[in-house]
Length: 116
Image (cartoon, rainbow, N blue to C red; front, side):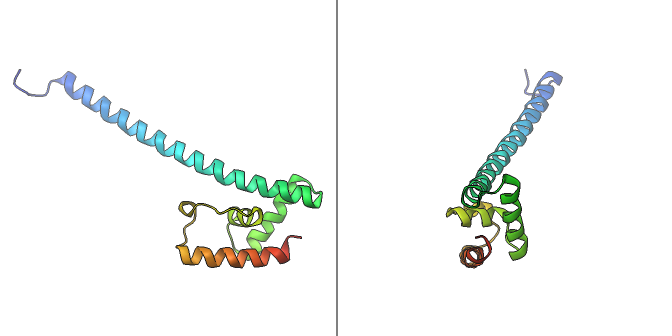
C-alpha cells in the first residue's frame, strides 16, 4: 500500500468528521439545557417563596416577578435570584463584574420596595 487514499478510507474519514460534528452539536445542546435548567430552578424557587409568603398562585407569583423584571429592565432570572438571595453564575450574565454588582444592588433596593 502506498499511502494513497482509497475510496473506503475517504468515506470512513468523512463519516468520522460527521460523527465529531454531531458529538460537538450534542455537547452544546446539553450545556444549553443544563443552563436553562439551572436558571429555571432559580425562577421556580422565587415563585415558591412568593406563593408561600403572599398566599398567591403560581401564575400570580410569576406575573409579579415578570412585572418587576420589566419595570426595572432587569432579566427575570436576576430578579428571582436577588429575591431568593442567590447569585446567578457570572457565565450566565453578559455584564462585567462591576456592572453586575451595581445591577444586583440596584435590583435588591428596588425589589424591597416593589415585591411585598
